[in-house]
Image (cartoon, rainbow, N blue to C red):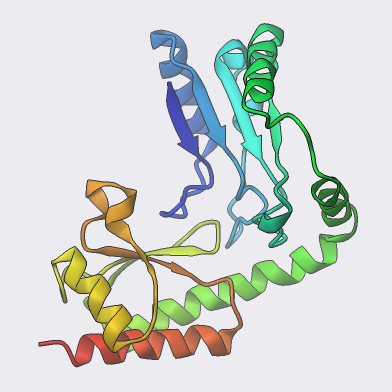
Length: 228
């Protein structure tokens, strides 16, 4: 089986139709189940377009499960509600059986009503959120270019997360985390927790007021400038 994250967390890539088509053909060729995590699907930036794996290749339907939720888009993680899409009836029955076995087959009322309210009435809020996130991305890019130019940034095409490479300043993962926490009093997600390729990286959440974001960036700057 393969897990696909689209848009990608933590890199922020929004995969193209052609990329998804190639992936579907590979899964079919090798009979690989594909689990498509599409929870950031509403948060595409700078005119990038999200395409659900559910629309790519009908031949893949028997091997595909797609997941999404309103929780990332509308900051509703605490309501504990999500959606699963399975077109294959037999696969759907197996999935539902495991939900019952794990006692995860019921939806809480807050989750149901909260999700419904978000999708029915949250359009204007989302329309205002997207340009705010884009502005925050630009703020981060400009700040590091001016103050810490050796930080390499993977500028996101979607999500509210930014993938930062600090190896030019600190190459040791534990030292990097300790420096930011103890000297900068700022907490980012250590890249190494995402796997070996995250060595020397940090994940920055920009879903916050610009004032808060700038304070965090200045704390990062202070931490790195005072490191021996």
